[in-house]
Image (cartoon, rainbow, N blue to C red; front, top):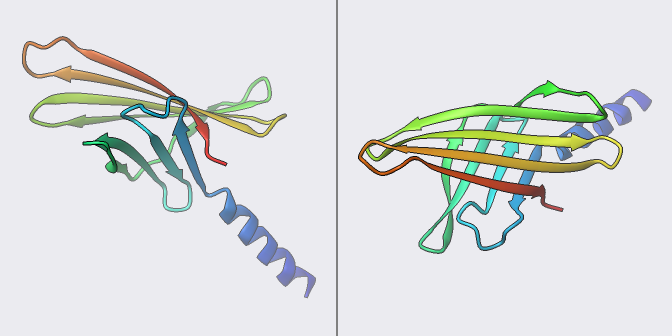
Length: 130
């Protein structure tokens, strides 16, 4: 009986942290949020289109742990999307500060246009939605 209760507790406890929803620190930004779902191994990138928040990219990959020094777990991934307009590189990072259990996110978008427009770099900072 104790093992069943423990198994259920672990299942629901791990399931609760399976989805991390990061919201932009600037509420009127064109990149309002991104979601990391560790159960489905997906990362979702949202953007505002005409003032409405829409799912822009859905990747079947999650950021991987690359550094865990000084009581901070750092996760990172890089995705590249190529379309008719530009080559878009997304560097997605988030950190877990273990002492305070605070998550902080960061996305750097590099948009390299195929025509003569200059390359555009957009950096956004996020906090975990409570």
